[in-house]
Length: 105
Image 1 (tube, helix red, strand yellow):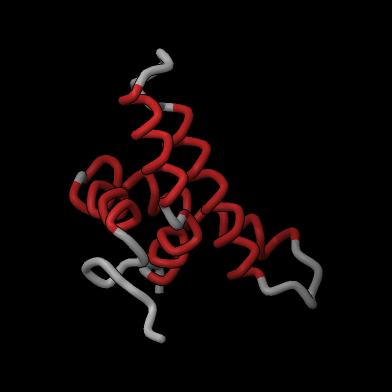
Image 2 (image 1 turned 60 degrees about the vertical axis):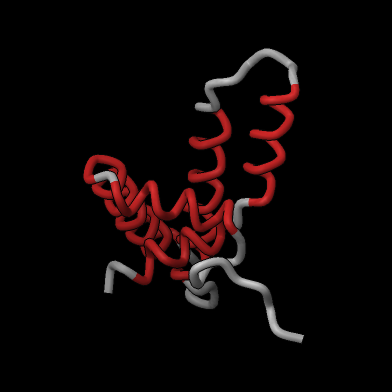
């Protein structure tokens, strides 16, 4: 069974977040710098047997998720906040982080 994709991404929610990051010069610059920083810190602090790239992807994915979910404009509990939170839960933050780290090469 093939994995469903949306424009090459896991799903529409992941694609939308990645598109906004890639389309906004300020956002893109910020996240590329974060990717570089995570990769550098992970290389400096990992044990030799730990894959520094995977460590950086993991850390960057957590940072992406924290930033995007904590900056949600909807704070009141209503149908719109439930829909937005549901969409954010579907985002594959790891896939976006991999994309950013791969772009450094």
